[in-house]
Image: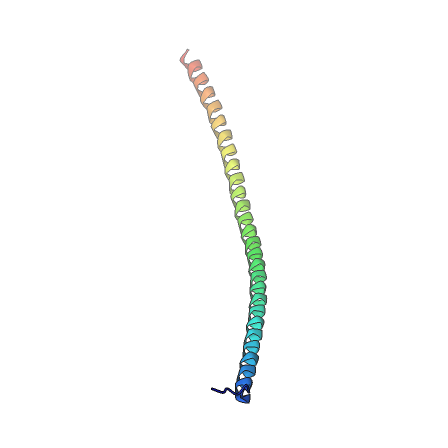
Length: 106
């Protein structure tokens, strides 16, 4: 058997085109990965900003609620102080009434 050492041009052209196709495909994949990394980085940054904004809003809302509760506590303390004063006065009046009652009874 006698084989000719010549490689047909069609085979060479096919191999070259396949190599070019593989290079182009790998390049596209690298570009896609890079683009996705940038998108993820942007989304992560955006999410961090949104979380920060939400956190600040929540803190401000809780601060407002705490201030309202403190105001209610102060108001309740004032009522409690007034009630204590009224009870003290009633006690004084009761003591005076008992004293007057004892005085009349003698």
